[in-house]
Image 1 (cartoon, rainbow, N blue to C red):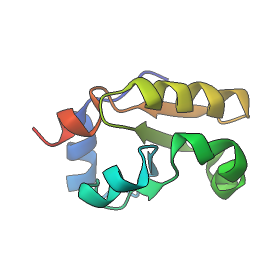
Image 2 (cartoon, rainbow, N blue to C red; image 1 turned 90 degrees about the vertical axis):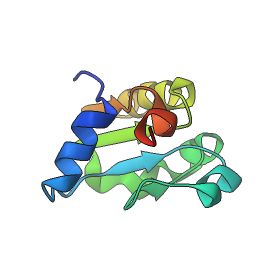
Image 3 (tube, rainbow, N blue to C red; image 1 turned 120 degrees about the vertical axis):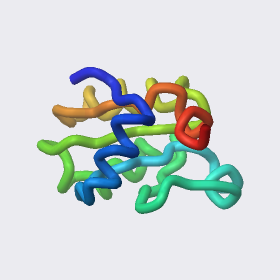
Amino acid sequence: MSDITSEELKKRQAAGENLVILDVREGWEYEESRIEGSQHIPLGSLPQRVDELEDFKEGEVIVHCKGGSRANSAKAFLAQNGFRNVRNLIGGITAYQQ
């Protein structure tokens, strides 16, 4: 599936959709700011913690970082591990906050 824009994500949140949003930034970044309802697993911890996301393998998972590069890595990793519908938030939280 294609990646998602911040506008589309905000629209879906406003509509009350129950979304799985994965923040792969470092802990200090997550503490500074976060998308409401996001789950935090830093990219470096994802291989050890991927089982925490097992329930979402068949559903949509929206991954984000600051600008998009770490999220792209997470997206590729999750796809290699059987996740069928992983989308990167284009521009990351930087775009989301604008």
